[in-house]
Each structure stands twice: as structure tokens, then as C-alpha cells.
Length: 331
Ligand code: CDT
Image 1: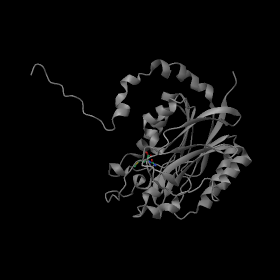
Image 2 (image 1 turned 180 degrees about the vertical axis):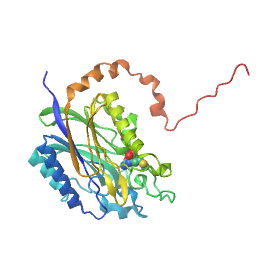
Image 3 (image 1 turned 60 degrees about the horizontal axis):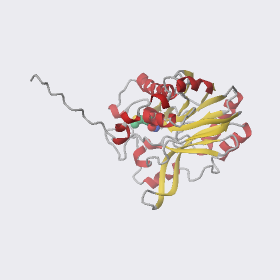
Image 4 (image 1 turned 120 degrees about the vertical axis):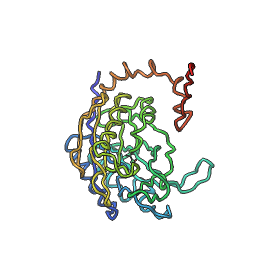
């Protein structure tokens, strides 16, 4: 059997301050691509919303006033250097960005729409796949109880592309099953399973995760924030027999701390590379896709063992429904 392996990299970004122009961020990203390539990487994953500060922490009354943070074309003049670097270096990449498009909604009316988006780009600079974030965390209105806002529900619509997977050439391989998720999606097993049901072999995901949980009144121990991120990614990889390359934007951005700890995970759920800084950093690991076979042909042989007839509540309801109350027959 042919050896099917790919060297992948997380291109972790340190903070991008609100005043930092796109051109500076893109130049940093091109340098990370070059460093990744020098270490043999054939595929590089950048974070969520990699071109700007994590702007959903900033409240703007008029959503249109946030448009400077959005991309209206991809590539654009400002992001073209990333595509040129991919071609020059022969590496594919994953990029998260805020997308603004004129697109018809469910009623058929074309209007400006905004999504938290990620793309996979081939070493030839072609866009292979687009994904729009489904699980938007946070809130839509200014919340005076929070020290830091998390307004993803204000600035973005729920993604309307599902969780797509594509088989595409990458590195020396004629085909790898590639999928994506974005930040909060990684905490939802449903997202992993939809990718798993399409035979995904490598999941690229980026994140901007505050070190402090503002929702919990500002406290959740730091180590648990990182633990929950890693736990989710490691479980997703194990239960779907795939690799993940999970990349942070990290450090103190606009005065708010985001954790780093970017990781690459194998189908056994093991971390095989981890970032050690909260700044621009490259980590690499080799993904030997033969490792996906064990899970797929044994404990997670979906065709043999899944029982969708017992899973109806997963797609049939959103919130939890209280169980019936036991009535003590002796009472
Ligand atoms: N960007 C993103 O999705 N961040 C969330 C933070 C949740 S706290 C509102 C995450 O799940 O990491």
C-alpha cells in the first residue's frame, strides 16, 4: 500500500491589535508560511478571523460600521500575498476571515450577509472549499454585565454551508479528505460526526478563545479553558478517526487575553505537537493517514455500529427536554 502522509503546520498568530493594518498581519502570515515550509510543511493552518483583531469583542451600534473588518473578495489585493506565497512555496493553507457578500437569503432576497468563514486553498492558489461557522457563541446585544463583549451573534449569520468535506490533492498526495470547523464548533460532537460521516481525514480549525470565561461571571480556571479546548479536539479526532490541526490567535489583543496552545492531534486522540508561546509560532507534525484505518475498521466502523434510529433527538430538538418523573409505586 502506498504511504499516505502529509506534513502539516499550525501557523499560530500572536495578537493583532485593532490598529494593525491587514498588510502587516498578512506579512506576518507569509513569514510563518515560509518558516513552516522550511520545516517541511505541505499544509499550513491559520487561525479564525486571522486578518484582523477579534472584533466581536467591540460593540458597534450600526453593524455596517464593522464592515472594515470584513472581506468582500478572496483573494483581494491585501490577501493576494498569501495566495502568491502558497504558489511560490508549494503549500496549501487554511484561512479564517470575516466574509461579507451580497447573497440571497431563505426568502430569495439578495442582501448584504456577513459570515465567520474559513477556506482551504490548494498549493496552486485555488480555493478548494469554503465553510461558514455554524455554532456562533456569545450574544447579539451589548451586555453591560460583561467586562468584554462577545458579539458574534451580532456580526455574523449562522453558516449556511453545512460541514462540507472535499477530497483534494495536497502535498504529494493525490487526494486527502479535508474538512473544517471554526473555534466554538470544536466543542460540539455533532460537528465532528458530520465530518466523520464524510470520511474526513484532516480537520483544519482556527480559534480565538479568551482565557477568561466572561459568561461565568469572569471566572473559570485558566487550565480548564485550555483543557476543554484540547479535550474537545482530542475526543473529536479519536471518535472520528481523523487528524486535526487546530490553530490559535493568542496573546493580549486590545487588552484582552486569548490563549494559545495550538495543537496537532492524531486519530488516537493524542497531541503530537503543541505550541509553547502565545505569539507567532509554527508547529509541525507528520500525519500518516494509515492511522485513520484502525478506528474506522474497528470500534468506530460507522456502517457496522452506528444506530441512527436511536439518535432522533439529536436532529429533532434543540434544547434539553426534562425526563419523565418516576412515580414511586409504593407511595
Ligand atoms: N471565537 C470563539 O468561538 N470563541 C469561543 C469562546 C466562547 S466564550 C463566549 C470558543 O468556543 O472558544
